[in-house]
Image 1 (tube, rainbow, N blue to C red):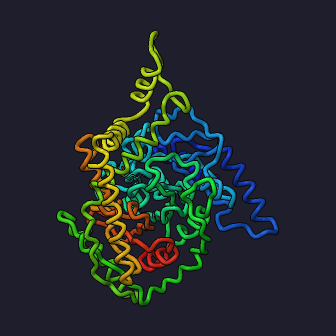
Image 2: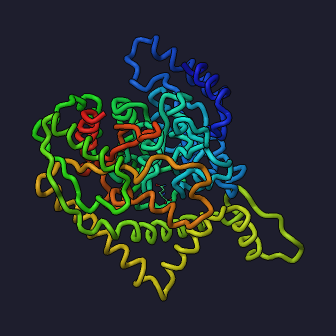
Image 3: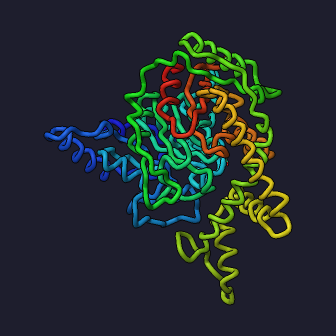
Length: 458
Ligand code: GLN
């Protein structure tokens, strides 16, 4: 299996999904997995399965750059908890996957390694499409069968949107379900790791392996991880599924509306009760996210100073430490990352902190409360579109108005702000044959239930 994947990766260089390949390590891990599978002990379900790992995860001794020039040459001395858990269960690492720089983006066009191309094309049109972002390499690699599954991370939609664009399954678990230790931080109060897979069952198995308490991450929950796979019965009789009216937005294409109502009908046919609900603060989610995420990013990215990690600019005679910081950060960060650092620094500055950052935090509390009220009223899960459209063309949105790109996250950011689990499931194709996905949002810590509802929709 590992050899087949390594061969497929060699043949798919044009996708630019893998940015660093680890064939020797993969074959070594695969041999160990073989021995374990032939041994007497019962091997875990992930044993011997070849995976791709998003470049945001620190992997010991293997380049981990968060697709940024500023981390050029950085070799972690440690393994992230999530990858450690996967490899401990016998999974095999094929290499590191492309992504938007520091996970900032929705199209994988901000990477220092260049764009990722989706394996999908519109019918009768050879124009290259985005696999989505920021976990674009992960989505493309899974969709193109270069690996059996991949890790992703999701701060505002970076697992769910690329899953929807590539016909794959992606789940962002409840905040605190997976340890963030060893994952390069973007916005720490929003970041979560999760699996990107070919099916809901694979997602259940892989999430069960990635999840669990970790004393090295103070926000990681000390809760038992249920057997998610065992919860996939497909029985959703009597479940209450909410359809939030505020997600019906102007300009949503008719085919997305249809996908959504077809999805609701499918769940109703499976015995669920469909109810209209209101999440009144939805329209404030995107602005609040684009204050909070850059604020946290500006603080997290202060550590890239040319001293501690990776790249340092060449200095001129007479340059002092200030010039060293300035030149290193100007060269090392791409345009989108610089934009986020500037926005974040601005909203955190003394004169604007209350007007922007504190206000956004209050809005975040209201958004969270909207969901709590819906769940308190008996709703088990919420069904929405995952994205406002199918995959767009490479170059179609980049280099224009950055806000246009941010609008891609309109259905996904609420879930991160509220810390809830959300899953994107492929449920149809658009008129040009491109995959479309629906999102299900669940109660905190009830990923098992959420996966089971997704299983009924798949
Ligand atoms: N597209 C969003 C952003 O650029 C979300 C990214 C993510 O989830 N990492 O911030």
